[in-house]
Length: 158
Image (tube, rainbow, N blue to C red):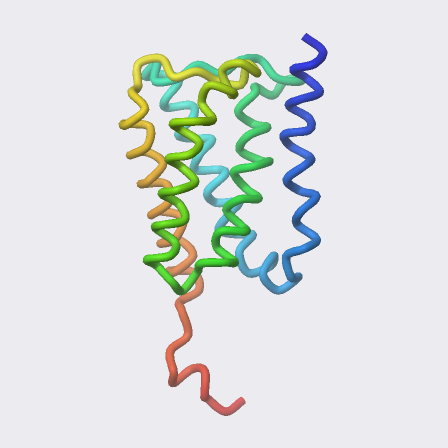
């Protein structure tokens, strides 16, 4: 299906068109965490496929359709959400909850229609819980690798 392949390529490329609007500093600061999360998500994809939680469709070349989601919207959204909410944990949780709920209860229909993936033996609620845990891991990884500055470190003379 030629249209599906074009859609997958657009799914990968279009989110990256927003990256120049991130500051260079924010990109460098949050990229390691976003890459970690994309890698973690890929491992979770393999595990979930073995457990028959979801099914991925073929993509372009050797990549399945989920690679385009992981390294397109998921990775770039991680960068943006961290840039806008890191250091404000309640806002981070609210933002992620809204994004994940919107995707699961609205967008899943479209990922099935565009033959990206379908949920097999996993309810939407369980998928939401998995995404919530992924969000906590994302924030925790960023927090561990780069703690939020305290007043002492902000006013420390250089």
